Image 1 (cartoon, rainbow, N blue to C red):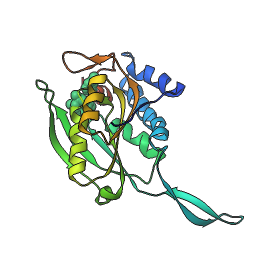
Image 2: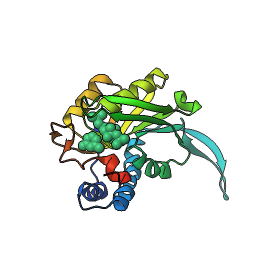
Image 3: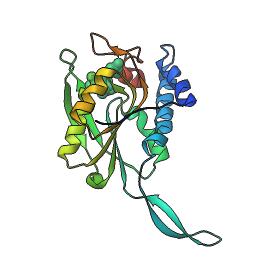
Image 4: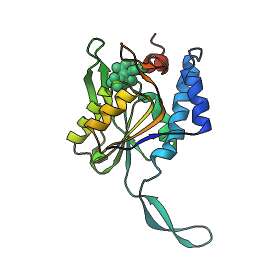
Length: 208
Ligand code: PRP
Ligand code: URA
């Protein structure tokens, strides 16, 4: 069974209260989602392996440590884009892939419309990024696409999940760790997370 980590940090809680608030405007929403992405990155990377590297400081030679594997960030379009800058600020060497999905409004099933991955993706640690884990259909589909591309080390990173989405992801991909800033109560009859933060893509890009 995959591990679920719900981050507990006063700064993350504080910023989540801002993005959840209906009165937060598009600019502040977008900036804060990105900032939470940066804060979450500490937790996602906690167990990343490092390898020794011989370097010279201005004072002496020493053994330092660098990340063993390259990192690829894969946002699920559109809303995943909102977290990318924050994560990339902390791991600037990461490459970025994209997968475009939207939920069919009737069936809530993910529909794919775009994908493009860097060549190094197979040997990389891949962070699948999507703020909302609702039914779990989009995240599960994206992870399946990556597995079919022969990616072995995948983690899911989101802002708000709910029990339905977590269960679906754990069942479909028991090998993929899940990182969330918050785990909410439930899905409503339209597939929205309650209390959640509303439609994340629309709030990021001002499309409603
Ligand atoms: C939203 C969200 C997730 C998905 C989550 O995307 O950004 O990708 O729904 O729902 P699920 O867990 O039930 O699959 P949406 O389809 O609204 O597209 P958008 O990001 O382009 O707005
Ligand atoms: N997608 C969103 O943007 N918000 C939800 O609550 C569920 C899916």
